[in-house]
Picture 1 (cartoon, one colour):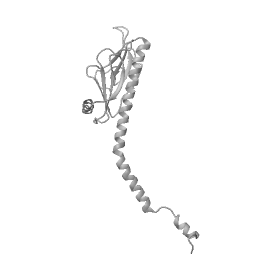
Picture 2 (tube, rainbow, N blue to C red):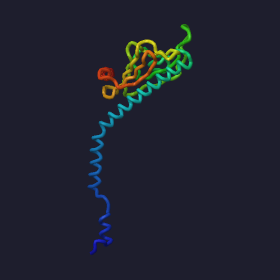
Picture 3 (tube, rainbow, N blue to C red):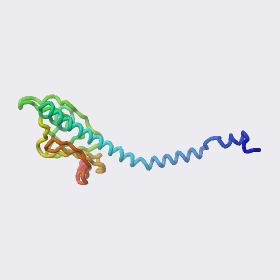
Picture 4 (cartoon, one colour):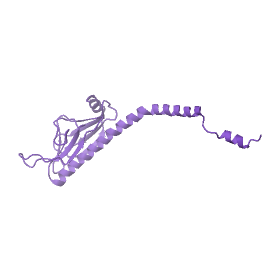
Length: 185
């Protein structure tokens, strides 16, 4: 029998055995089990970073709206999407709206509303429950800082800061800010 006979060629290319398939599945399962914790951490960090970018964009929008309309604009936490909440917790959502033109006038309806973030703790400074942008773009008052972290995890915590001049910036949280944020769930 020669090596090039048709029967030997068929035997060499007969396919994959059941044992080979089981070994491949076992190796893939082990690799997936090793990757899962890292993937969970990556997803949490991505969620926090997305919330931070969303906040920065909303704050810049509120500032721009104040400048272009010539009216004071509020950025505040809201759980119902209709009015500002009196707490420094922001994970339930927020809204942007103009201040009333006169003391007796009711605040107009919000111009932009964002619903909550799940799995994230977002804490603002306790002294300020809202940020108020004036027609010149300034956010007069003390500097306002928000801390963002995955619920119960200080890893990957971020901050957003609004200065008195109205400048908005994002940054990684300090170790102290991250620990305080993770403790507040």
